[in-house]
Length: 248
Image (cartoon, rainbow, N blue to C red; front, top):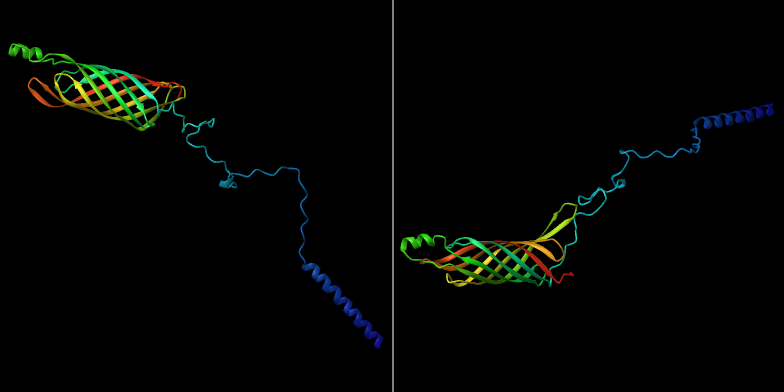
């Protein structure tokens, strides 16, 4: 009898152990098998998946399709320590006298790229168109025509350097300058010294050649037919300039 009870107890323990092991297997999750390797290349990321840092930077506004720089261009030549010789001509709009033509030249030496010293010489007729009417009224000539010589010296300052695009895709350079000076008009109608101020524009064609437009106000005291006062005389000139030395 005791042996029978002992066998029943051992059998009960074995049955309980098997039931517990099956319950643990039922609770354990299934482990997925690793995916099989594939020969297909990975898909490219879409626009939504691409980060901003992965995109190439945008082209700069100064670049064309060929990535050629357009914003920074080499200057045609340097003016520092160079001599500019100008031959020019144009209009002399006199205040008291008749407007007429004028011609002459100038020479400028540039101490820096922006500052230069200049000397100018101009020839202009000194005439009065109403002299014939005055002669017929008074019976004798009150004015005698002559040739005037204007000699000036002064300073040039170039505060603005400009660039323009020319046909063919090239870039042309130029300077806008301010002029201030003094001198004398050699004429019987002029008294004392003359002073001038104006605006110049240089357009560089080659490394040794440029085109100039020159507009100035020449102020001086003049006496014409009994009237004496300070006059403002406008000169508008155009000319061609040569630069020395050529090799800059």
